[in-house]
Length: 247
Image (tube, rainbow, N blue to C red; front, side):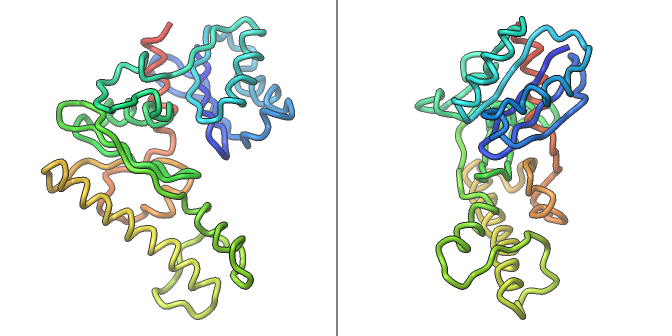
């Protein structure tokens, strides 16, 4: 069994995996890496299972170091997913700057949907990752995440409140909160749709399989015809596939 760890800016996802499937998944705040709560999360996932190695994708170097120190101290091999060991063909000027979670997403999407394929990850930032019809990772787009955008409005204005993210019932708001929800959800969908249209045009294709993942994927992509599928565990699936090659 392998331990998979995806350390994001806001949350960390962790799971056990065999060569064929992901199981026993847990999500916890990434800040837990700094309070030793992570030890309980790790033991809760691993239990008495014999684990051979850990494979980690991370965008938070300080949390990565905490994970590495603890796990190697526990006798596990600790590997980081990188552009050098991910197995992807990459056409990018500085491949080392590509987030490891984005590489894992690409691996998972190619395995299930083939190429070309687009992955949209709705996390703290929303990222688009594009793999062309030759199976080459060619780049992407990064925009503010949905929560980051609404939090910014609340923090930088005197009268706009903190809002709960949910699907608005109509397109014309009858309150400040409803108007903000419409701007967030429908405005965000329109941005995503516009970007996907232009990306497909750049790939010289009218339609490219597009996979959504991340915390807000279901909220934003529900009933959106541009998306082929929603895969909440895509990053972990990509890490599982990569762990089969990395020993």
